[in-house]
Amino acid sequence: MTPVELSRTVLRAVRSAVDEGALSVTVPDRAVVTPPGPGGCGDYATNIALQLARPAGQPPRRVAEVLRPYLVRSAGVTGVDITGPGFLNISLDQGAASVALVRRILRDGLGYGHSDALAGQVVALRIPYEVRAEVVADALVRIIGSQGGRVEVEHGEPVNLRPVPAPEDPAPLGPDAARWALLHPAPHDRPRIAADHLVQRESNPLFRVRYAHARTRAVLRNAADLGFTPEPGPVGDTEEEHLTLLAQEQHLTLLALLADHPRFLADVALVSASQGKPSPTPHLAAPRGNAPPTPHLAAPRGNPLPVPQIHAPSRLARHLLGLADAVLLFLPAVLPRGEEKPSAAHPARLALAEAAGTVLAGGLSLLGIDAPDHL
Figure 1: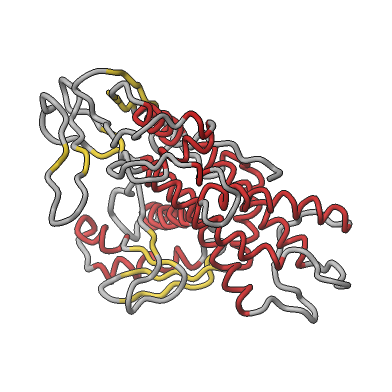
Figure 2 (figure 1 turned 90 degrees about the vertical axis):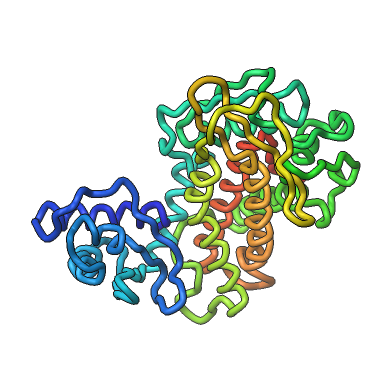
């Protein structure tokens, strides 16, 4: 069960409690689920009881006690504990959850993580005639579009998106490396236009992301030669062999990153409300201490409209890099070694590798970058 799915499970529990008269509240639009904090337990925690306490006219812990039985009987939930003033700590059936996660990714393909969270919202962008601004705007069109929103891009002053310009023409790097060079740095950092974006070694972040994707496709081909195909299931052998402790940690890290991908995409696609009226000209906000200046986002003329977080493309690039590193650590456990025969666990690990490669390809596509199957 992904965090998004668990959030919906929590809301269904609230709705059931309301329908049965156990609570008298308006069912909220969203339930926040996060990893448990200090003193917490289980896989996830939610503060929904604290959120509903005032409208319910009851103490948060009492609201949590009302909601607990509804959550306990939800599919995929193995236990619910109440901690602190009323936090609900939820334990999940991780085996079933991981299988369901892999199946969902393979079903959704490159669209995994896409949603209608921003459906009906139109974001107005005004950008200067500059290559980095154009590329960042294009990435925002794709990222916000993945959540059902729409971006209208115009040129001219006053602008509300002005990343630090590229110091030189990035075109000689080729389309993919050029886009990575412009999108990977934070918008207030000067992009580096250099040939090291083209080298095929681990020191090149773009190469690591694309290589991780290509390796997932390579193990699929190698597995076919060995006579087995992907099939979601438990990744640990059920008989004699078990994943080593290190491999288990790598597997859990990879699952956590994949499960968090929809929430991450929704988060980076959210728009932040503009404040006040537009400035006559954009400027760099005064830095604090030695911190680099950050671009001021002036609102469009007329009524203030939401403007996107221009950090979204760089955050997505770093998210993909972390996922790629987790994939590369996990891949050695996918195929049988030496004279080892394929067991039930190998198709399951292969399915997880395929799912991870799919998420990498989908993320790169949102940046406008190709994900080749061979490198």
